[in-house]
Length: 128
Image 1 (cartoon, rainbow, N blue to C red):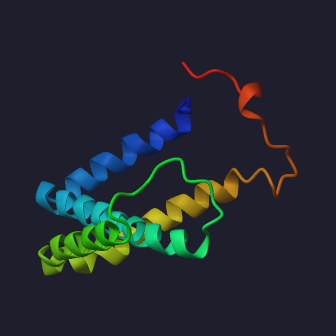
Image 2 (cartoon, helix red, strand yellow; image 1 turned 60 degrees about the horizontal axis):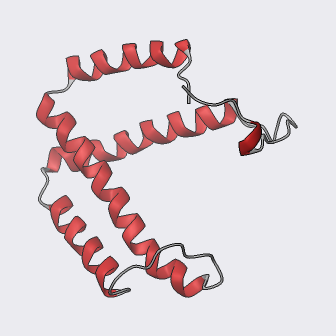
């Protein structure tokens, strides 16, 4: 995947702003709580999808399912609960910022709304 110059400009603007206004420990805690939240969601989704959609192709097996995904989610929640109150207060804003970026990017690049055909993987340009 090639990065476009506009994407680079946004990265060059956002990183210094975050680094300039937030201490490194706060940024690290925000990254940690975001990753742990994602792990909790994925861990809980595994047994739910296995039960609700048994027809899906499963290219791999989860050992000790559903016990291991539930233990994983509980462990991640425990780690999240040990983060500071300030991190929990910043977390909704961090998630909102991520959602705005995600949906803003998707809205502007939506092929379905522009009635563009999807490109098959074999027709795509090889990435460098």
